[in-house]
Length: 257
Ligand code: BGN
Image (cartoon, rainbow, N blue to C red; front, side):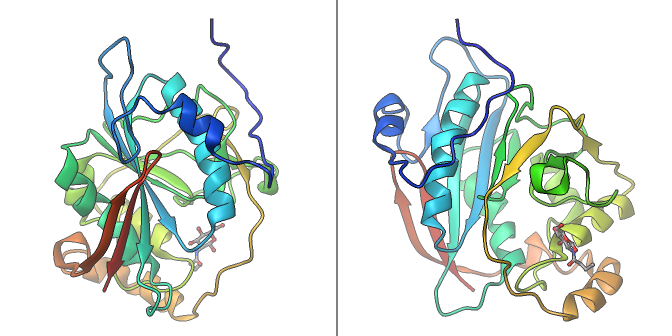
């Protein structure tokens, strides 16, 4: 019998994905997995924004595939990257989650997941609810406390209907910070509350990384965000597909704006 519950993620530079690849060979290609003995209740797409952090990606995949399969989910992992020429423009990258994943399947649930966050507890169930969900409530580096009450970053989950209703993320935020706060404001503007898991269940380890660059313009964008809800978001995002490759453990997508 598989033991479920708290499980310390393995964080080790030596990880190579050979073992994970061998164990998870039976899945469909492109990082799409199905439970072998039942029909999953939800089909889940996980979107990971990526900027050349292969060291993190290895640790992430090594942890997440066993974690997700223990939950008997049908799921697919997408790694989404921007063309090198463009400075990190984070929010359009996030908006691609729904547009690209829904070309493959009509998923029940769309996750946005930072590559540097690893869930510690199997009871942190990766599925959507009737309200948007914020998953990464407690993190080791923040002493397992929420940094602030309206925090919606790190790991979150929304259904297709919820995404389309609020027009997903604004496309205006570049570099680091603010786009998740703006999405939270959109949810509140549409009279939605956010479900947060219990902090002892939704525990995450953060992998060490350099702070990404940020821009002061994000404060102004945030304070004026609600005015742009209807015209700035998933409905007006334009991008070009540069590359889409199926690897055994994930689908890699590179876009250009
Ligand atoms: C906040 C960022 C969030 C980020 C968290 C991480 C901003 C907007 C200006 C106040 N918000 O400060 O985007 O997820 O930190 O803790 O920068």
